[in-house]
Image 1 (cartoon, rainbow, N blue to C red):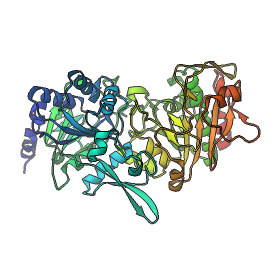
Image 2 (image 1 turned 180 degrees about the horizontal axis):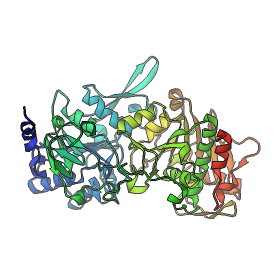
Image 3 (image 1 turned 90 degrees about the horizontal axis):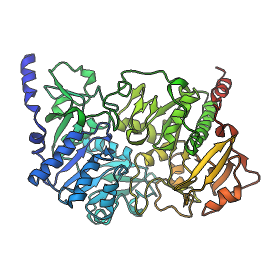
Length: 554
């Protein structure tokens, strides 16, 4: 067969969005790639909803995603806002997403029972696509045992419709005396994917994207027997067959059925950027202190600094750079502080979307990083986490109770879902929960080496009993021996067999008035409580690099 004949065979794959999407049947299970806006086929998602409004079909779709395909005002959130405004209940019959946090409207719809809503952790979700693509019944994992995800404790259902329908479920299985959860969900029949370039045969490359995502695994799950489905990919351009090098093909052409060229404005790298070569990994910028503007010394930076000091201790102990994961919010600021202190080279910083190194973005652009030196697929990244291959992780928290249980994200009126939290928390051997001591409107600053609480937050985060358990230290310890700290701007707690022990308080803080009075339980306290390092509360650099160079004899 000649080169021209091979090229010709793939020409029919390039079609309009409507031509491709019109093949989706009512009631289909549709898998959509996307980590916020990274790898989200925004054009396909919005055109699918537009087709439904135009024709009434396809309807009653069950939506599955590896993370969340959108951000506030874009992607799935934009559709949810329009559905809610119109009172349009026919488009979606159910959803399985690890994260709903970027859409207050979706969360409201879940609470109001518009459709079935389920959640798993990102790592479980990404593995599930790979397992289904292999013809297996689901994902078997220790993650989630004795937490909110355990079927004996409510399982993964977020509302009553989901509990009654049970389309997504978990089963407890015992292997060698240990309990595991078998996570199961409907096999996807349609894949909505995203790449940068597709050639005439349908081969897809991702050279402009900020992450690898899960597109290959979604495509595999869709194509797996016994019910072979079809995949639609959104790209920026179509090239002649042979122009994409074999090693640069992210999804082979035979797995792609339709190629749709998207307008540039519906194919940004992230929420706030069209195209940044540093984000796609084509340019690596030296991460010197001059590269990062110093963060203001507010309570968020104070916490990030304290986490950095803990990680520096671990570097000195191990005698080498350490592999770390940084979660969304305050934990992601640790990377910025590491660059300020010129110690980024001692910490191999990873984020759950796949990048290694660089400086992670925060907010809606979380998942992307400036100048990463490597990028893994999301399933491969979570293998690093669940397998305990990393050295440490810092994650946020919403509530903590006396036993050390953590609720990272779920309240009666708030249903963001676990994101990557559950897998990372279970797998990390050194775990540093990082967050404000209280929540709500507050004014907390550092002045001359001490903490000053000008206005206290009115929401307690250290409570008698968390609303939902997303991290259970007893189960996690059976899975992986862990060192666990709970780090705030005014106090640090260590997890022990008897519960939480208060080990440090900030300079300038009154133990009774500023700490114990704002907790719903009394932590373990023995003897004198240490004072947090004063360097954390001063504007100048902490000079962490000198300590590390001395410890490592650089």
